[in-house]
Image (tube, rainbow, N blue to C red; front, side):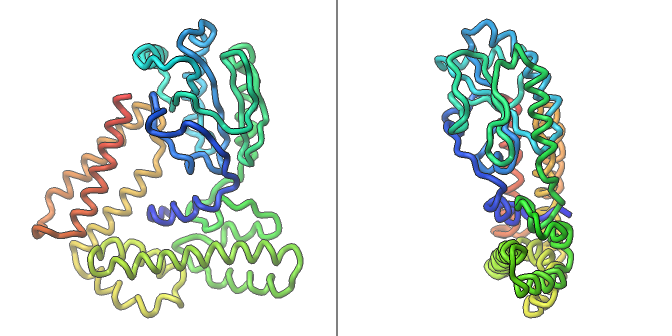
Length: 337
C-alpha cells in the first residue's frame, strides 16, 4: 500500500530519533542525490570524512563507491561523504566521477556529537537511535566499517508499508504495527487501544502515544480532503479514498462528495496520477542508473498527461503536471551531478 506525500510527511515528524546535523543544505551540496534532515530520521547513517588533497582518501574512494553501491538497496541506511578540506569543486567532483562515487557528498557535513578525528580518511556509523556504534579509518578497516553498518541496519525496526506507527519503537503494543495500516479499517484496533488505556500501566502510555499518532493522521488527512474538494478535487479524492478505507465510520459525511468526485473521468485520472507519482518517489534512486530509469518513467507519465483533454486554467490539472515536472527536474539535476 502506497500512500500520499502528505502522509509521508506526517509520519516523518515522529521518527525513531532525530539526529542533529550540520551542513546538509543546498549550499554545501557537492555531488550525488540531495538529502534533507528528515531523510536521516530513524536511519543508520554512515559517514566518511575525506579530502581531495589526501592520498589515502583518494585511495579509499573506489572502496567507498563499492560499499555505497552494495548498501544502496537497503532503505535503512544512508551513506554520506563529508568533504573536509578546502572546497575545490572541480577537483572534488572530478575525483568522485573518476571513482564512480554517486552517493551524496556534502562540504563539511557532520553529525553533531559524532567522534572527532584529526586525521582522514575517517568514518563513523550512527545507529537508528542516534548513537555512535563505530568510528575509525575506513581504508584500514573496511570490513569493520561495513560490518558495523550492516549490524546496525539489522537492528532497525522493519517498516510495514503504510503502517501508521512506522517510526515508533513499540515494546508493549508491537501487534499494532500490522493492525494500524493506512487503507485498511483500523477502527477495531483503536477500540482495543482504548481498552488498554483503561487498564492502565506501562502498556497504557504506549497505547496513548499510538492513539495520538492515529488521531493526528486522521485530522490532517480530513483537512486535506476538505481544503481541496473544490479547487483540486483529484488531490481530495486521492486522500479521501485512503481515509474512507481507514476510518469508514468517520467518513460518512464525506462519502457522497468523494463518490461524486470519482465519477468525473478527469478527476479520477488525475487522482491515479498523484498516486503513481508517490509510488515512484518511494522507489530507490540512489545510483545514476536508477535515476535515469526513473526519469524515463516520469517522462512517460508527463507524455500521458499531455494527451488529456483539459480546459485552459484547470487548477487541478496544472497542479498535477507541475508536481511531475518538478520531480523530473529534480531527477535530471541529480543525474548531472
